Every structure is written in structure tokens, then in C-alpha cells.
Image 1 (cartoon, rainbow, N blue to C red):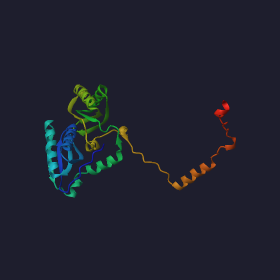
Image 2: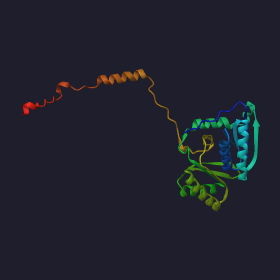
Image 3: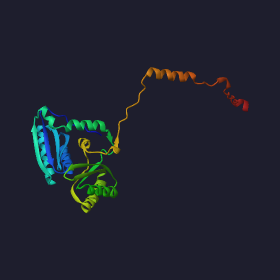
Image 4: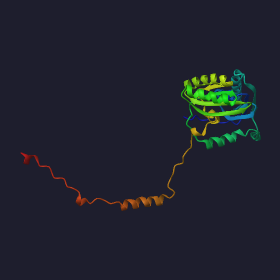
Length: 255
């Protein structure tokens, strides 16, 4: 069931947390969403592995979300910087194009068949290590390959979806394979992603269900006339030719 998004108050703020890992920024964004009433605007990737999660909401909520998100990023050793911008002017949106872009992507994308499943992210330095890790994960547990993300500096992240236990087993198998082939950089498992986080994760087109519009007759009057004509042309049975059942004998006659 889709949870309602928190409304943006008049005294709004922007919160930004930057890392050098895509799994780290997704985990950071997940914590920001779950710790306060904020919306995830999206991510900005500027190359060399730098990723920034941008959230929006009330000033106090944004401050709390940024602190909690920065703590998570710091635990992974990936925190680069954090910032809270109180009462941003409308023109500041010009340097944050991700909001409009994400809105268009979500409206065009449709419904993902992998929604409401746990998320597993495994990041490597080098594409061969990522492909090998993805192969190992798919063979180790009942998971589906959702997509992948490239953020520069040779960093590639494969994204899988499935039940929490399957995702955990798959990620562990992928870690060993990534180490064997190349360099493992970061991993993340998110058991229950929120809707805002779902909208920002890359998903392969094969998992997207396009919404089909309901086909209605263009001219209802013409359709009604056609149905009436079909009823009039239908052949009715001749009642005179139908067999007539014989009456049953009375009880006194049988005696």
C-alpha cells in the first residue's frame, strides 16, 4: 500500500549529504527518510564517485534527517560533506534539476514488478567484478537483477531485489566473487524501502509494467444502435414447434 508523502511546510529547507559510494548514498537516503518527515528529491552524481542525496521538508525535520544520514555515511567511512539550507529561494531550484527530471521519469516509467521487495546493492571498482558478482548473487539465492549504476572513478553498483533473507545470502556470495575478480568497494541491504526511495532506484525496463488506458467506445450512441440491431436480427424460436409435456395422471386414476 502506498504511504502518503509528508506535505512540504512553508518554512521549508533543503538537506544535502554527499558520499563517494552509491550503496552508501542509498543507505544514507533510506535513513534520512525513516528518521524524519522529509521527501527525497533525488541524487546528484557529479563524477569521480561523488553522490549527493537531496531531501526537502520542514527545517527541524531536515536538520534531523541530515544528521542521521551523515551518521550512517560516516559509519561506512564514505561521508564527504553535509549541508542544510533553510528557506531556499525558488530560483535555487535552477541548480537542482533532479526534481523535475525525477518527476518525469516516474510518470513515464510505470509500475515496477519488483516494488516492495528488499534491496541489495554491491559496488565494485571495475565492470568485470560487478558482472561476476551479479552472476554469483543470482545463482546463490532467489533474487532478481533490478539494474545497475555507474558513478565514475570506475565504481559500478549492481542492484538486486528479493526477500530479505535471499538478498542477504546473495550479497554475501557476491562479495566473495567481487574480491576474487577485482575490488569490492561497498555493500548495502535495505529490508523495507520507502516509496520515495523506490522512485530513485534504477530499474531495468523488463520489470516495468506500463499502465494501459481503459478502451472506451468513441461514440456511445452508435454502439447502442448496433446492439439494438443485433437484438432485432436475432432469430427467436417458434413456440408452436416446442414439445409439450404430457400431464401426469392423478392419484385416484392410478388406484
